[in-house]
Structures are given as C-alpha cells and as structure tokens.
Image (tube, rainbow, N blue to C red):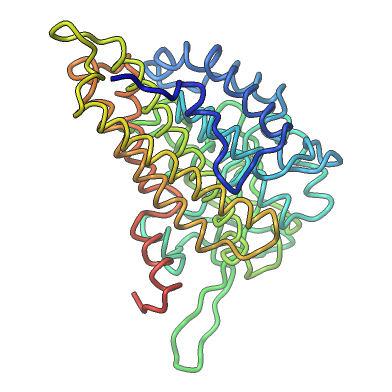
Length: 403
C-alpha cells in the first residue's frame, strides 16, 4: 500500500475556493523553509531551557513577519491578513511557541495600537514593534476575569493628568521578555448605575510602557507546554502613566478588544492548523520509515486510516480559517466563522497530536520528538484566546439559542 500525496504537497496544497496568489505562495514557502532550517533544529534546545530565542525573533523581525499586515507608513510590509496567517501556520508546524509569539505579538500586541491608537501612539510604538525589535502584550485576563470581563478588578483612576493603575493580570503572553516594551492594560475607569439598580463597569484600555515604576513582571509560569513562549502574571501598584496613554475611547476598552480578539482567533486558528499539519507530516514520515515484521507500519490499514483522518482534520481546519480570513479581508462579518475556525483547528491539533504520539509509540513519549512537544503544547490551543466552550457559546447563539 503506497501513499500518493507527498509531505510537501500536503503542506502546500491550496484549499478549493481559496486559491493563494503567487505572492502568498512565495511567502508561505519562504517561512516554511525558515521554519525547517532555523526554527525546528533549535526547538528542543530552547524548549528544554524554557527561554525565548531572541536571535530567532530577530531573524523573524528582519524577514518582516511582525509587520506583515500593517501599512508601510507604520513600518509594516503592506500585506494582507492572510499573509500573517500563512506565516503563523508554517511556524506553528514546527514550534508552537514561536508561532504564538508571532501571532500574539501582532494580534494582541500591535493590532490594538494600530486599530485604536492615535497618530502619536502609532508613530511612537508601531515602528519598533513591527520591526520585531520589541514585543508588546495585552493584559486582559485576571483571576476572575477573562471570558467574563465584568469580573475585571484592575482599576485606573485619573489624577492630575495621570492614570493611576492598580491590579493584577494573569497569563499574559509576551509580557516579561527582555524585549517587551509595552503592555496594554484593561482597567475599570468608572461605573454607572443601570435603571434596575445594577452596576455597569466602564472598561478602558491604557498603554503601559515597560519599564514603569510599580509595574512588576512576576516570575514566568511553569507551564505544561509552550515552554519557549514568554508568559507572566503582572502586578500593578500605583502605576502612573500620562492621560494621553488611553488607547481608544474611554469606556470602549473591552468592545475594542472584542474586535481584536475576533481577528486574533483567525490567526490562532492558523496556528492550530500548523500544529495539526506538523503532527501529520511527522506521522507520515515515521509510518513510511518504521519497519515491523518486515514491512512499514504505514502498510497496515489501521495506521494508514489513522493518518487519513489526520489529513482530513488538517484540510477541514485550513478550510475553516481560510473562510474566516477571506471574509475578514473582504470586510464581511466573520465573528461566527472565526469561532468555528478556532474550535475546529484546536480540536484538529489536539486529536492529531494524540494520534501521532500513538503512531510513534514509545518514541512519541520522548520530549526530543516534535510530536511529544505538540502533544504537550496543543492542549492550550483549546483554552487560549477563548476556550472551546466560549466558541460553542458564540456558535450556538448565532444559531438562535440562548446558551
């Protein structure tokens, strides 16, 4: 029994109805080559050391990856959102930590400044961020607030032309690295009483440069996976920044972030697709090379069918994120499609990681094996940037249910 589709073809095949331009294909192939020759060989070492590879981030910056979807006048590459997604997918294929560093660096770090910042804020921050010389994070999540923004307890009070911020944040990506220069913080800036007597919190977003007195990046988390990705809890004690550091309109912080999050889910779904693709490629290679009882294990129907399901999941995940991305770029509603893509992609990554590990047997349980790292890494894909349950809630509500 032979497998007709090669590793290269499964990774580079267009999805019906969403044909890539020659420019997209060149970018995809360029990033794929970079991922295979630079990122993949170093992945195990950095995973073991649990450190962000700054030299690789610098090379990504030199390639223009952090500036892909932004205008040239802001230091960007003038490309579209699909270009970013293609780059994230190829990086996530070999190392999810590197893929999410790009995805979060752009989607959560730069995009809020680009979408909601003043001209002065864009001029100050975007050139250094789009060049990859600096990283930015977005501080939304707290112990009692994430999906439920009403639980936000961090406060920002305007005093003598300065915002005085107090609170804590959790699970903030790119917030404590050596090159982190900015973290956007969501905070309660006021309250109003509704007609029924309940209190509605006014949430705003505020730019906090790093370092700023009172802003403390607590020790990095000891995570199950994504060991190379920079993730910290944050403590803010009487942090003072200028009133002009308000990002967007006062009271629109969470509403603006929801737009950013919808866009980010599309790129996150691309990361999921890359992870699922990476597991597929490793399983295909091993199934052809590994011989038991005088023949390759891939000649066993059970293994071949398992790999066929892995390919089907990758195809569905890629189709889903392409659909969401093309709607985004066309200016059409894409919130539902983004949630579907994130849900389908994260499940594909987790399922493919499990199946690839099983195909490798004992070798799949060794951390030096890429599928073992994908197995550890992929669980967070069902949690980060909106849990699977949140995606199901969004999808069910779009169908008219009050879940």
